[in-house]
Length: 413
Image (cartoon, rainbow, N blue to C red; front, side, top):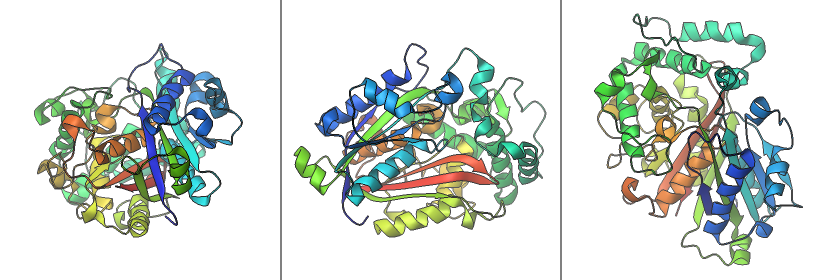
């Protein structure tokens, strides 16, 4: 960062099924918590970045979502930018807020992400994700996925007859490729899931808080091989928010630096053409290298990470391309317990998307909430001892063989 930018307030609603709540209400709850955490008022916010991906699809509110939600809670007369970047919407909003205050255009900015994805109409609910890849190339996309996962034949009875997101097929193809290329096992994917569900027991905001053994996860209902139900993120409602400011904002709000968490790096980039097996040029590999350079740290300096585990397969791949282990070794890293709290590199102490939940427009800011909580030593039973430098990785959409966009944030205290 060219100057110091801080996260001074965070807020997050419980994630889960909230049919009785509205987009406005969820956004107001998370924003109010973030303002209270920062010790400031809505009138102190000079710009806002509002993340949401599905309200247009679910409710027909295709435009001005942020202006409507924020004005209803009394935040008025400021620049508001609506951010849609698939599952990376919230981290993209955070990235924009950080750069806005870093530029001096404002001293205090709000990033808020919110989503209501649950519906009694199951077809409507699962079709949310159909627009997260090139809709003009759907048939070619599916052919590419089949080719990517080729060489591993799913056993009979390992595909669900019930509706599920097309992204589970995408992750399953990535997982079968990983099994073919590196010898990764379904049990290693299950080890990731068991670890994350165990972490979520101590997260009061998580959608699911039940612990599972590896054997229970392997025996759970199948989604699409090698994925079983607990290995996959659920449909979720919820909101998360952060208040960011520069040095002038700290002084104006009279905030001491004791609870202010510094943003060491914030990187966002789209992917580029590569072969599926060329993970050295994975979008997260390239973006994280930039982030490490900006922050002046390396993978070995990271105390704790929140990564985009829309499935357990995703966490294994991200642990490799982020540099926490050699490419191809992510399954063994997880199975050895090194990514659990108390291990060498704790990943997803919140429970991750698999058990914390995945309201796509709020997910990236929920990661920021967790890491700020960790760096403040306020995480209770899921606290990572001695956490000093934290990394969040959040991806969105699909283009070719990888995420369409990736956001990497590094925080420190």
